[in-house]
Image (cartoon, rainbow, N blue to C red; front, top):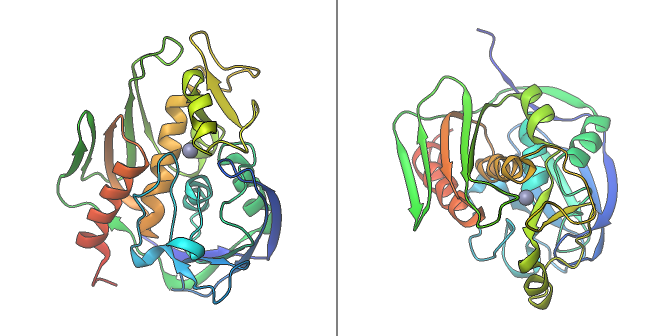
Length: 283
Ligand SMILES: [Zn+2]
């Protein structure tokens, strides 16, 4: 079998938009990066900014409803949808400069990021790609939420959702993910919240950039002010988040993930567990 090689983007590309949680308008520049350099975020609006490299095993679990990399003034929030797009395009090396604290929401899914990065083009490099090949069962849990990973020759995800609302019924969705199936079945699924939560989130200073187009505000009958892209769009979005959070390893997983009600904090815990076992001190 031909060796799989690392990739970066071919051309530099810029985009801008408002953050989902902060509502702040930010600009982002994605730059090609050399092989082995990894996915690196850099805040350009802070003094003495420190580059944050996802492959270094930095996993934030401190903030709810989003995945944040780094600490304090150097941190970047809500990176999971971009990370999922980078996973789908098999991009190993890229520098992402941002002049604010949170990535743009775009349309609330991974589709916008895929379109932008796709327009930049993909360039293959010489170094071989690193893959996390799961060799034995791994588990993390928190109350009713759990994630199990089993050895598998492909990347398969099975996610079970369970919300106390009739428009998001209990359901399990299983998919073998590759570039094509992700782009078609998962990438367009937008982020969501329950209508009863929306006011509390705003009071807590979250969701300031959310609107009816980039966020499904779910009441008992369905989303407010928009039409679902898939009957089970929230469930598919949970898989999108999981894929993005697992790519915090900076390399793809070969294995089968079975997730029950998991969110960013538990996803990060599993990613960290895998990092310690399969990535740290290994090339
Ligand atoms: Zn999300």
